[in-house]
Length: 412
Image (tube, rainbow, N blue to C red; front, side):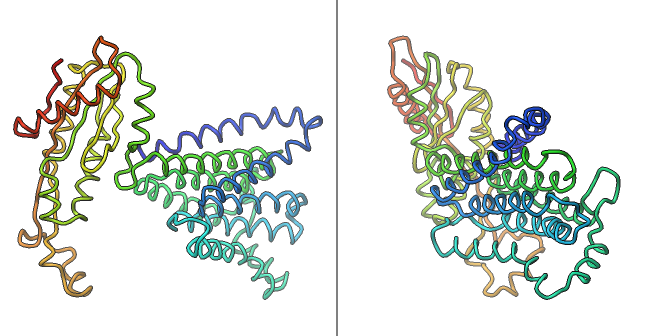
């Protein structure tokens, strides 16, 4: 999946929330208490899911969402001319981008272990900074700093200061770059959290804006936890492709017309023995990336080891052959640079000295890999998907016998 496509669902949820705000206002006299409590219920559900699935980042994001909504409901229901409200508001404007920025970069290593404890402790420390400052500075000093650094209401209809707005913008840009590199659901959810906090704090005067937006971010975080658990169960950790379990489930739902292609990396064991398992893993990730971009509506799965599988629903073999041939050529033409371990620098200083120099042939090997592909389609004898898969595997074996690096269609 393209990294930025992960923003589609959060964006849709955000738009729906903003669209339904007016309807909420119209029915507020009848259901006002339910509307105000709905974010609490949804955030609590998000926290419980994060605990259940052992997701530290989702837990921290949900916990902070709960804290912010509680502050809004208890501390910010009065004019910002009051010092306590102004300080709470300004604190949220600064802490929010800092915390989300922290969430962008910490790895997900679970909640119920020392890594989860450390991440949670550092997050709480970030949240506690305003309370610490208030212990050491008096009200007059804090008000002076806020008015000079974070002057609110820079223009009519906009409350947040220009400086904190710029901070939000820079954090959002960093998040977009991180999403492009990492391509993770939680990063897109964190970007949504950042955007919703920004909109809430910038247009705080809009009636019930916080209620609808915090309902939205709760749903987004719940979705993120569910998708993370799905990925743990159904996606291959090394390549990021759907794994064998997902393939088995897909085979149960195929219709009457489909094509299954089986493929593996040629001479992979020899490549692994020559360059090592780390480089072998890089090869598998490269091949998976190329196969995942196959056209024609195909879905790619990692079957196991160096074997992969692509399913084309609603197709016949002749229709899929050009797409498979194209992806075979893409893999064949890709040049991998393999560092020669015998010339690795002995120290970090030497490594930094070499960095930026023109690559030398004696330090690196340029290699290419190929794949063989066997293709089969469901025949008219009520053939099961498992039988079609076996036929594709037979065609793959024929491709190996025919010299490898080719596409072979199964002949009934």
